[in-house]
Image 1 (cartoon, rainbow, N blue to C red):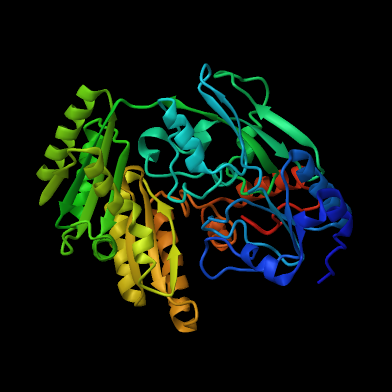
Image 2: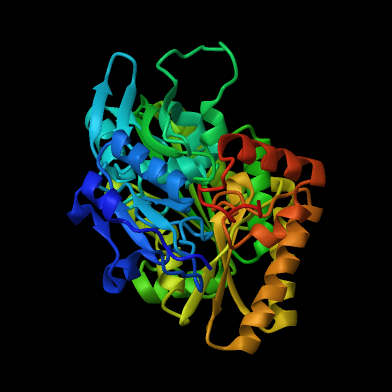
Length: 460
């Protein structure tokens, strides 16, 4: 392995206080939110301007040093895990909201701006920034764009890509480009901004993002339905969609997760229930009341033992917390918690849930299941211990079978979290050799020296 470069030249340009190379300073940047993945970088560079990002890239190019861009490090696929002798390019200090344009319903934010900050600013002006990843209180906009993050409102409102109108990106050679803009319609040339959305930092470093906002719905109703079986909950989801209702939220928890949430948050959930659906509708008050009544009727028709309808915002927040507490409550049960995500067509949800349960039993591993049932995205959550080599081997075998099952059902190995390092071995089961080679060609064109997050998504 080659020795890391001498960082004094870069430190002189950025300020010596903005380059860290001491071991204890590097440790917090050696991992992200992915379980069991970590690697020590050679240095961490803190930047506050696109020009400083460009300086880092020119230094990296001159010294053939890999660069891994990072925001808050909340990713769940190892996308921001460093490589040996790399520079972690930390954008968390680029956290300003640069413009709020109420006439065009846009916000221009630096990459390090916290998602919740953007959402709160929009809300104060009667507007909505819909993407709401589970980590939105600490995740950054740049990371959301790099991973094309989803969230609970994805069924009705879509994902991050649907709200990116423009972005500033620094290429591997240090060039700074602006792509897109405030025009609602623009078909002048290739839509290059879309190339960088979901690219996981492998094609360029995103430094600014122009985000679209929408009017805040005037009304919302929240329901919580309890089911005696997974199949009946899945059938209720299918019936709701078939009735031409598009809830803003349609979330699912299995019995393992229900028990954990109740032990953690004491919401009042029946711990013997096999499944739970959190359902929310928003829009015009009359339409909301109509849709809430229809969803309650359909849930009961498909076996719901109880349906709670929130009467106040506080009650709605309490019911919604059942889903938002899912991961944190499961994380209390085992030393290592691996939050995975797979997506299938909604018609195949019941089949996927059954397969996950069967795989868990056959491999003797514990898996809690929750997720966005309305858009077919489930989160099988493995409760394990990374120090138990035999158990981890069973977890890996079970994980592969679940991914294979999802693909056979017409689905994908990841709907939200990205490929990164964690799912790189499974990408060939999802895409053809020709598609994989096209991805490599794009990478070689934009990053010929393979400096930007190398080894993520696929091997160069």
